[in-house]
Image (cartoon, rainbow, N blue to C red; front, side):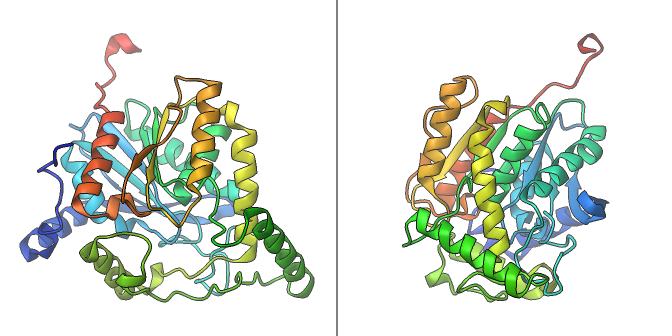
Length: 341
């Protein structure tokens, strides 16, 4: 696959002039909020040009906020897409539910999906002539999938990058990991019902050095991410609570139980060297969805070899491949004409 010269390269990110160009673009965006489930304040950003005929909605991963996606949005906008991006509840600049803002927590997982649906229906659609595309990463993919199941025909189609269909249990067998989480949640509710505990080994935000990171091979993109979070303490997010993990397990069950409710064509792009999420569950999801309807998904994810979890923040060749698959799946649409009405 040939490299796309119009996409930002790692060498560009070493240029002060180029970074200032991204910064000037970023200042042209709109940064607003709306009330999600339970009147929870949800922040978002968007970049819009009436001459663009296609719109992409971004559903970011855990710990991510729209600030992290400046390079990504810059590249998408230069490809003539309008871009809308949400900060999911409990992360980014959106309202946190706990007194300790570092704790990864959500009351109910489907609240994420309801917020995303409200965002698209109330904020995005009034500015669009066609249903938008949905680009999601990791946790954002689980949210996007639940939204497509609960609210059909909300988006045109979707690209799911390194989707968190299921959490990775690491060295523990998945069944045992679920038992540990459920037992921990029982003790949490018994001993401290008003304060969700961190899961074992989880803590407040602290950056990991590049050499130990499992997210990307790109040193400069990783360093930019770490420095961004150091400069903006409000968007820092620590580890997950036991309750959050329990909700993630419930979400996995719902995703597979409601798989026949999906009516949106989608493609999964899988990071070959991912250790953050369960790639086998992505394979299972693709096969089951394809069996239900071959028009909605291929039998297997598109796998990018050597890639770590964050495909949009990887080294140039992996990132370029990822974007090419996105562009292939998100062709530019024509504006609605009078005879389409």
